[in-house]
Length: 303
Ligand code: UDP
Ligand code: MG
Image 1 (cartoon, rainbow, N blue to C red):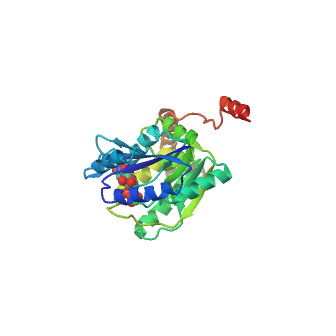
Image 2 (cartoon, rainbow, N blue to C red):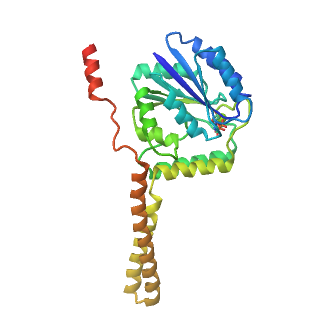
Image 3 (spheres, rainbow, N blue to C red):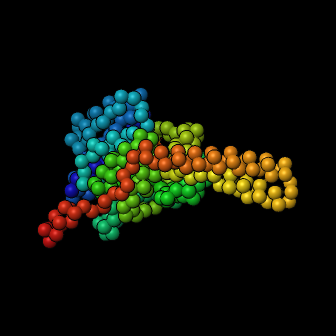
């Protein structure tokens, strides 16, 4: 069995040596699994790429993908997943905030439960600026309120998944990607391992507050079209208000309220049409098969 580990790296020359050492240690404890390590250099401006190349020369399990410029972690994850050849695929950060030693637990959990994906969630946010935690919590509340799929609070991208699930993610054609949402959207039986927050081993975070804010907005917009309906609901409320005002004979107020109702419902209808267009443009599949007919037959033949 081959397990691919996908690691997006952007300016990680300081953290990467720690990561590689840890990875080697973890792998040596799992002799029954073959590994490939995909280091995706996301247009780093420091020595990350040179270091990754050196690892690839020294260690045949290491594969280096290198971007022409910085395209962002989402792009790096997609490239890694698309190039991974493993029967199982894992994604983790280079800074050891996603502890590689959890791989053993993930594998065990997968074998015991037969699930398709073992994901991780941080149960603490220790060491994180309080403002960031506050907004992160708010983000999960908003997204889970409006979206059809749920994202567990504190869920990380760090996970181990089956080939089928990785393929399903890669096949989603949308350009603006929010992996946490995509992982949830494709479905599959996902179990969570919990762990305490760990600070990065070396180097600095690539996320500014505004960067994260934009990322969160991206998540909300990509997962739900609910905000586009708000105008319609407000318009309907204004229409009711208008009717009530008419009953009381408040003509001028009723006129204003009626006009507001017209405008808002108009925008709302536009929003709903836009929501449909957005869904179509994203081009996500209508369904995802977990088991295909041929596969089931193959398994039967084996028995
Ligand atoms: N990363 C990347 N491209 C970017 C930003 C980050 O590939 O444009 C990688 C980074 O090297 C790390 C992971 O994404 O492996 C998470 O980044 P970071 O640790 O800075 O984020 P944080 O843990 O602070 O959320
Ligand atoms: Mg980090």
